[in-house]
Every structure is written in structure tokens, then in C-alpha cells.
Length: 158
Image 1: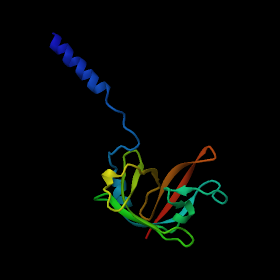
Image 2: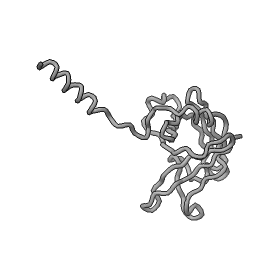
Image 3: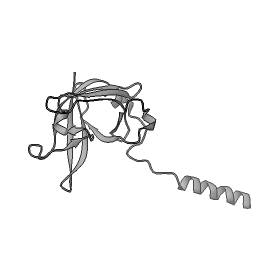
Image 4: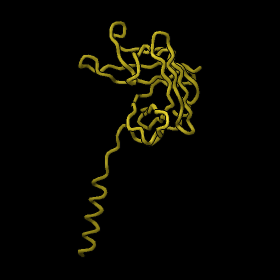
């Protein structure tokens, strides 16, 4: 009797303590990943007040510097790269690792040369929207003056 009560208690404790899934769930949305695979460029970056506000994207450069940037997404191994080379903006290139989860978010990590993805602690979580054969959007929420606004990266297939 004591043994079965202990097993019941352990079972309840095990299932009762299961962690909640977060936005970085690794349950993949393979269909969206396959739709996104390939070579892309960011055609435009839009957000409220973009004519007079500056937003730094990915801790790299001004959001408008990402217009024209080149991105490559490989879906079978969730790797890729990006290149930022707009005039009057800092030049930047990086290998990336990425995935799209079932909740509709893309998780992107910019990789440092010589450092494996599993040793890269930080990344970015962006909502994926309006995916079709030639375009898709990544949407980031940023704090501008105490108010969260959407920064929309509009991608076009190259």
C-alpha cells in the first residue's frame, strides 16, 4: 500500500512539474521552413515613425541599413548566412542558425566565427507572417519610447 502511494505521489510530482513550453519551442514547422528556404533580400523595413525614429536591428545597425541585405536560409540543416553591405552603413556578414516553430516564430542566432551554435547563448525571436512563394515577413517587437511597436522586415525572393 505504501509503495503504490509513493509511486502515485512521484507520478503526480513528475507530471505536475513539467515545464511550460515557451515561444522558443523546438517543435518545428517544417512546411514554413521549406517555403522560406532559399536566397532572399530585405526589400524594406517598416515601423511607425520610421521617418524620424532610429531603431537598431539585431544589435548591428540601424534598421534601414538592412534594406537590400542578402539572406540565405537552408531548411534541411537550419543554417544560412546574411550579408549587410548598404552604402553609408556598417558592413556585416554572419553565418546564422534558424528554425521556425509551430507557434509561428523564427528563432535566429548570429554565429561568431569559430563558435558553435550550441555555445551561442543569445538570439532573436521574430514572428513569421504572410509567407508565399516570393515574399514573407519577419516581425520584431521593439520598445520605442516606452511603447512596443512592430518592426516589419519585408523579404523578397532573389
